[in-house]
Length: 154
Image 1 (spheres, rainbow, N blue to C red):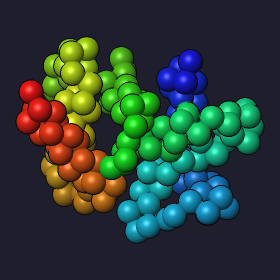
Image 2: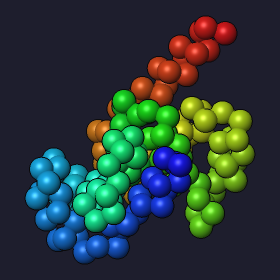
Image 3: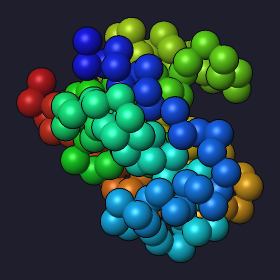
Image 4: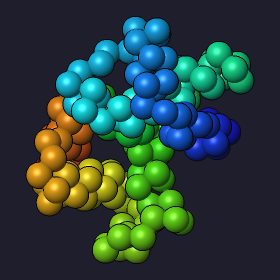
């Protein structure tokens, strides 16, 4: 049920104008960094969580956190955070090279699929000479550590 609700509401603010995204984020003390000022769409997850809480009375912290983190990821990503991040990257309307392989990997190995989705996002930014967000880089490093630890234990 949590994944369903997070999925249902995660992009509710996606189409809001840039000014409104930033205004709502500031109004609710969401940290605005230079990357967010350069690309306000980066806060749509956080603003979606705000709207879900205020307008739809979603109060579950796991759901709200997953919504907030689905755009950039987070080094402390929990299971629901990872599921929503990955689901957003491979949803049926996504059409990019490698998405089918990523969808298949998601069925077999969630942590590795989340890492690969993160790497794809970072590659996309690099190809466009855009700087990656520190949260996405931190999530990538944490996922790499988790997978290495798991490998070492096997």
